[in-house]
Length: 119
Image (tube, rainbow, N blue to C red; front, side, top):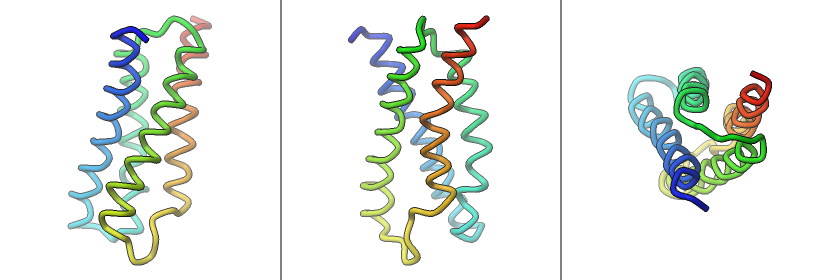
């Protein structure tokens, strides 16, 4: 694994997760908890697409599939430890918005890799 791949997988995966985490904590003070994920999601999608098309320079669909797997693992594991275990949400954490977030975290890098390969 080269330095660029580590930066793209672990670095950007963590940064994207952290942005959502911080936004969630800020929004927790001003909106109902059930709405937080729905408010963060469009911001996260735009930011993720910007990273994928402007910052990631992968040269194959396989590279982007690796990003998809790594970023999704980061999201699932960090959410579990830093949200579910740390805050113990009374009404639970795993709802439609969270499952959609995980699906988009996996699918967006693959779409970007496929799209970059066609251009």
